[in-house]
Length: 160
Image (cartoon, rainbow, N blue to C red; front, side):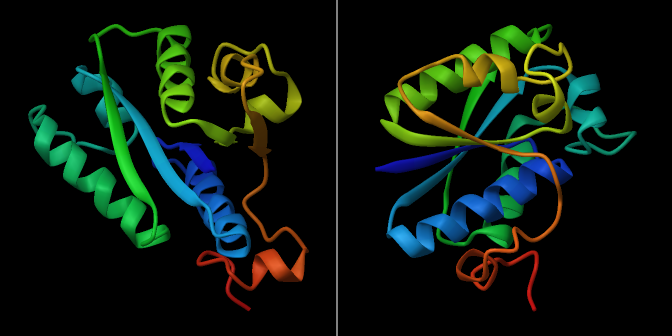
């Protein structure tokens, strides 16, 4: 069984990765963080993958993302999928869904403020990722401990 995390290194994606790793530590499952990387400097800057004056260097972006994953969940694997410069949220979510199916995901973890309120918002890939019924979806809406001691004691973000 594999837990897949839609990971863009934003706050709730980091919490989703931490949550997936907490579950995995209890179930002894594999965790794979998946990032879709459009070949777009503006997109990369919006997510702090690039500094304001840095040129788009794919390898540097991938190294930063892999380091971010390792810093949160050292046991997790990092995989990426490239997308066109002007990839829409629908394109990004379809690439995540395809990767989740390829990895035989049992659960996909999505960190999204919007997915928790409304699954059809355009600002989130959560609604499209949740539409696939080949896996369960765990939506992380809050950047705080779960309140479940068995999970929270494994968390790297919410140490007691």
